[in-house]
Image (cartoon, rainbow, N blue to C red; front, side, top):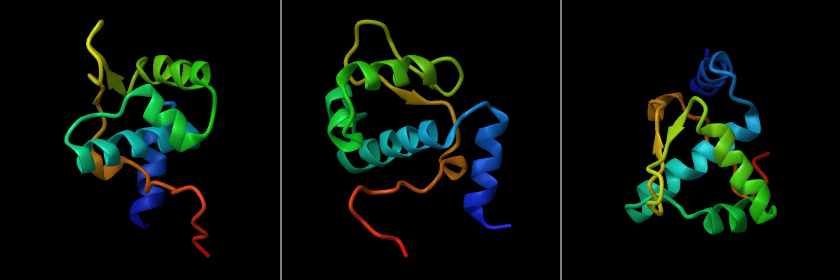
Length: 96
């Protein structure tokens, strides 16, 4: 079994969809690159969806895989081990 399929299985055990996994992968990658979690606007630019869609996804993820401090910007903490996250699919990159 490769790492990606193992990660997908672990996240699906927690009720995380593939799309939610991509948000988690983006949050992790962004925080690793810039030293702080992304703002919702950063996620909106990456995923290319509306601001309400990003906010709803964050609220959904908060149920079991992330934590935020109320009233504190960029306070997302991922509650999943990095090795259990899927690989981030970058927009516009053909992986075949």
